[in-house]
Length: 364
Image (cartoon, rainbow, N blue to C red):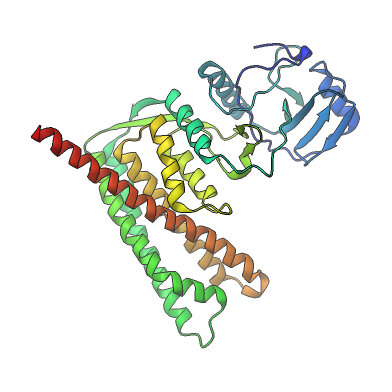
């Protein structure tokens, strides 16, 4: 790790999302930047968490966080892992003159990164995103064991819950259809019911498959996961950067993939089929086990968010909420579920192709 007083950067540490909510005064920022050997000549408070600071030559992003001692320890461990494994797409942070990763002001943690200007004319490079995330997951992966009985019990309870959820949806549709004049929200729910019925059926099938697959193994893969991979945590400039790693943890790769799919599918001009084709780039970097693919489908077909929107509509006075916003939120969730169905088909195709390959190998 290199000292910052000559604007050197450490290689590939992780930038974590600021949880702080404070705008520092000019004098305080000058004091903070002095820890890096930098004299600011211009300061722009972009948000209450981020300030753009320039020394007349280089622009910096100063971020504020209120990480706890535990999360701060985890954050530093993530930084060292990123540096050691040369993880791609991770925005570097600067060291202070004293070779520290951060400075402290009261209850706040502050750290410094290069300022990256996003190119709004540049479309998000989804293939590169899948490539980077696949490499991060693969390079940091290790295998552990989880008890099969406990997992199976949890998913049986989940199936029972899904039965109750579907009954709620069915009853809601019946209630809406009794109205002489349905609201646009109610009409949309009724028009989507057949598709949602299919979602519940496919979801139940994949839960069965997942439980059967887990009966055959207790092994489980863990990787360094971002933990909150939303579109706003991706910067597309001349290259792609993945920022805001404050929720980073070791978990199964499906956690990140679910976030990516759920966020990206609602981007303008994004269609499910090309997105699934681009997913193959990830699988080339980090091949998933069949039970992991099942779990990805389960997460994407989870209907609880869709149903919570309906419950909020039923439990509150609709006049207090914008009908347009309710419909937009419902449509976003619906698109995720429809993508889940597409990925379920894709997984089934891959599974069938694998069986055919096995048969061909046996015959030969």
